[in-house]
Length: 437
Image 1 (cartoon, rainbow, N blue to C red):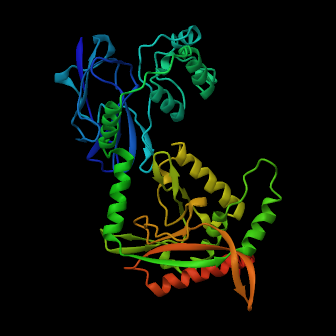
Image 2 (cartoon, rainbow, N blue to C red):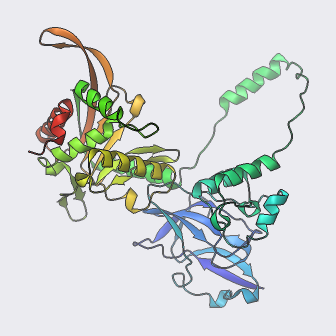
């Protein structure tokens, strides 16, 4: 037997340390080469780190939430001599022995992977498992579900191409190993009043501590930095979107059955692209290290997206070159990629201005936090019908508020208000969005 010391590799882009998010293995476990053993998070990405060799885990370094420097000992494996692992005294530098790693962009969530649970697999699954000594091929979503259910994916037979495990394979495996229904039992005896009161008191006093690590830590850090460093100027404007709703309804009426319908966001995006030509100072980044405002001609539109793992901002790159339908399709695509943890690093970075919407929970107004290093963010609130006075008469109109925030260091209040007024003009008369003057 030999001992193989695997050190935290250089994960690129100037990374000097990484946070342990979750261990997929523990001392005593047996791992195969390329099996994910730990998930870490740098300031730029969540990274799944695979084992460089096969062997038995002797020790691991760091608990979830701990920061580990690049080059520090990460895991020690006991290997067979023929496995080609270097002895402890001859272990190579960290960068040289780093295996391939799977990365997810910084705003994406940690990916879970299944670990062994020692449960006996159904016959069909055992037949498939006999062929799996290498890393199992499947999607991150399936890995997450398997990990949460305590299922070893190597025990699941895959029906996809080249034995890939698809969702129905996991569902079939779960159904086969599900325990029989529990027989009905007689109702429990009444609990004495004193014991019941004691139980209620214990429940009321109970607390739960949740360590802030991984994506949630990154979100908390970025939000704190944005509010601490950026003097936000908030501006809310009411819009009459009756004509916009009429146009949206007309266009959605021509959509084939089953196809996604248009929301307000693609219209807002198209109008924003048009307005930013007159207000380039709002389509910019502030480079704090150099003390420079970088104005962008291209509009790389961030779309704030709520996911099960927290807020992410996927990006529609070069929005200025897309039509209404193209914007709608790309916004849906990148948002879904963010929710399913399939977004690439490029799809989660590089935005120059962000739009956000709380959908049906939009409320009357909000004060969105700027997505640094950007200098502006536009928020959509709930659309409602209400009576308004037009030319001295009461009419029912559809209204909606735009809530915006600007970096007051670089965008003056007058310019911020003028930009939102120009956006209001476009959205209240939507035909102007499509007229290139």
